[in-house]
Length: 217
Image (cartoon, rainbow, N blue to C red; front, side, top):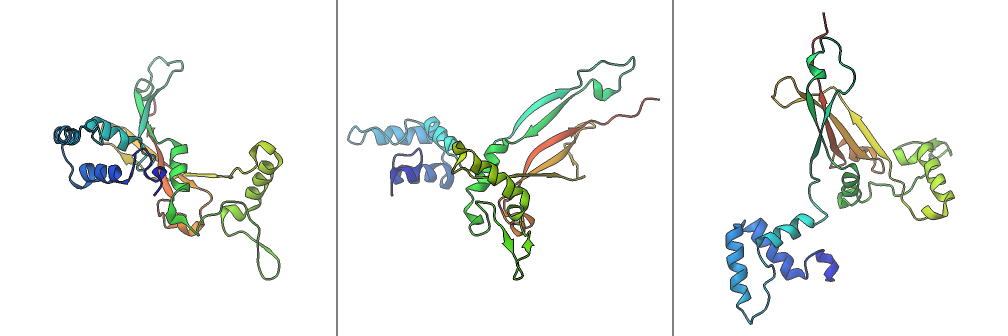
């Protein structure tokens, strides 16, 4: 195999060692350091990893796996009435994933092979009538692809529509009156049957805080 197949690792043996230490054996950081020191004594060559921190860094840097959660605080910053409701005075967490990273993971998912459209398409029945069976077979997707084709600088680019959705299901975090409203994201290129079956075609993009307060009397 080519070196590129193992991403940041130099070769297959280094990749397998990382998998064994971290995933299969779940060796402690201290024991990894001891093992690397022992390996360094063989023929005076450098060990595969200088220590456990380098190993962990390489694993974390791989462009696969779960997208990390991020968060920020929001708070009302407008003019306060004489007796402001409690929600105007509190800070609220908004938890989210990087939307671009989520879409990249979905687009690279091999499970979607044969169930994803890489370009807009026109589908017709036996009578020549247009049929809309998936998002990429609709006129809107075709129009967007036409706009991409008009610009020479975007030739070869792939049109990747984003589908957002939410529902009335709230996720309580069990702290005070705070609840979160889930916001979902999906890759518009996958076929409807894949999205309906989830199959990692739908991910949670964010949890939006829902302030609760009584109406002023």
